[in-house]
Length: 498
Ligand SMILES: Cc1cc2nc3c(=O)[nH]c(=O)nc-3n(C[C@H](O)[C@H](O)[C@H](O)COP(=O)(O)OP(=O)(O)OC[C@H]3O[C@@H](n4cnc5c(N)ncnc54)[C@H](O)[C@@H]3O)c2cc1C
Ligand code: SF4
Ligand code: SF4
Ligand code: SF4
Image 1 (cartoon, rainbow, N blue to C red):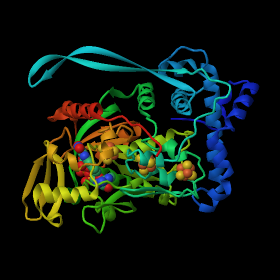
Image 2: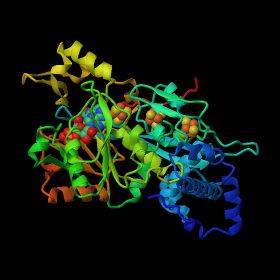
Image 3: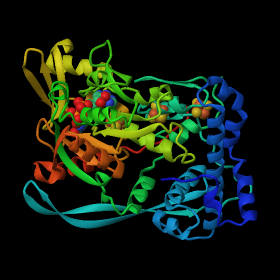
Image 4: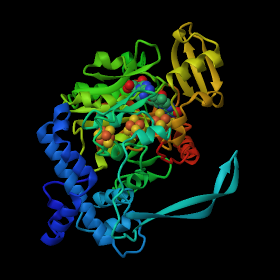
């Protein structure tokens, strides 16, 4: 992916141009704030001195590259990201794509969106009908930059929370170099006295600026990937179930997530896993770091309340390799932290990202109210909750089950999930959900070579029974339809300072 190391990318740049660009780069507010707060950062113990210099080095390299990209684009007409990455041959195309998105956010580049309408034939309730579909085309061009232009300042993420779009993923609190942010499942607080206004939290937050166009364009560079507007880039789609009886007892659907994680732990591909377990309050998820298979089984099964899982990533520093399980907004956050601001992962130990499909999640109180209002049952007697066949279903310890149509439970969902367009965890290595597969089976999307390899290795190890998603019904068409609906209904984000 993004490679900026030891200035190798600058080999083709003249020393004068490189010097000018570096000089401009170190004026960047983020780099200055980070550098000036060195003592405070080292005092928190979050990053070692070596890591501090590694991070600042790559931030300067990335900012220098952006200045060079900007210079090369002045006077050019609006272009697609892929076109720009082909013109600017000095740098890896992935870098150029990320640079453009970041330069836009810094205020140098304008995004031109063109909407075209095309007529397509669709089967609606068994009948073929002509339907108008909108297509969006994104082009980018350097703005007229006045002499007194000041690069945009990135606000701390209180702006995201105050705008009521924070998904409470917790990533900002792990990234913040001075531990100024505290995130729970419903709250976000920033200690103004500690915050050194570096804006790093904003750079990595999945709800600040969108990485959708960058993600799609980077995927399209990889010719081994298939691409769908609805479920994004992927290697392959499968339907699968665990072969392990112990996992069958605790799983949500096919038990694929637990099986894959067991494979990773047993084969020492990871030393620990970040997932969620039940907290002391039943059905309230609690983020947890798991080191062994026995504890792993305690994480199986879906808890429909949200958890700020990524807020504990900074507790995983002692592990060399970890896997993280989470819903799509969390996978987006991890990807963004990898791409921005510098292509330098703050936590290089994150080796595997297992994403869950997710239509929406609920506040904990929302789950309790839903069970009381819609089912009139004691939540302590609920052994499993599920969303299946258009219904929200609860299973009781008596062996009975009850379901209500999904539309009846929508009002209990979290408000900020309405700003989420991703059903299938576009940015995971492997995405897993139930939509598309029969009961007791999971739908699996392998997103890249690494994800496809561990999936196939877990099959070879006898942990998973797998078929192509084409072999099962309702299969990929239903998955694509629901994923498309989620994208279409997603509300756009407007950040407002309060
Ligand atoms: C909030 C939420 C909404 C979902 N909505 C849909 C949906 O609309 N359609 C669909 O097809 N699938 C949805 N899923 C995914 C589905 O419920 C299963 O998690 C998925 O099919 C994997 O099943 P499995 O048997 O392989 O998982 P298991 O082997 O049972 O493992 C489940 C994993 O999920 C993790 N997990 C459980 N709850 C949470 C949580 N709240 N936050 C983060 N991680 C959690 C656990 O840590 C565990 O690792 C949703 C999941 C969640 C958490
Ligand atoms: S990183 Fe996550 S928790 Fe932090 S502000 Fe953004 S969405 Fe909220
Ligand atoms: S809260 Fe955000 S802006 Fe403030 S120090 Fe932490 S990462 Fe930087
Ligand atoms: S709908 Fe989106 S924002 Fe809400 S929990 Fe799921 S992935 Fe996160």
